[in-house]
Length: 274
Image (cartoon, rainbow, N blue to C red):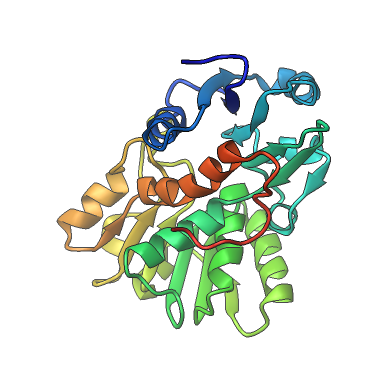
């Protein structure tokens, strides 16, 4: 039963129709008896500033889960950023304190790497080809680099964004080879990751031709809807081990549940997923 004491987590995006996070969060919160609810909220880019301003006064708001296209824009609207959010230039979780202060974090990279570990996949010593250089891709790239892979190759339609990500990663992780590349670099990768929106329910397609991917490579996607994108279906048919975005989403669930359990407890400090 929803009452005035129920903590609310608003999942914001535009469009919001395909969002799966509210259902997953509500099922998980119900299972552990939390007096909390996640609700999808459609917020246009033009209304984002007004919405964030109003969120400061929403007293039973635990925080926000931020989806496309707001992850970059909201970083300039919150009061404080975690190191992860600052490095990636994007925010996907906002915690509201009792005083109304909004603290932005970016847990896409954390969730992705945690999901690999849960699936028994190591990053250290691997060669990675990462498609994308936007907020999600940046967050994932920084978390991957912290795991000491041999090489990270960034492939992106905008070469400037790819080069900027390479420069930022190199400055922080001097021991990891980080370069820009093309789809052909999938031929030499141990791990191929799609961190773009290509293949989603609203943007179908393939970020790379499956035949270019090296035999034996793991193929991962950050997209959760559909659970098996065209890339993953094609890769599985070709004998690759696949890793869906739903796994990343599940790995982030504990962080979000912690926010609902106690809005005074920061999500910005590292804790292991139980």
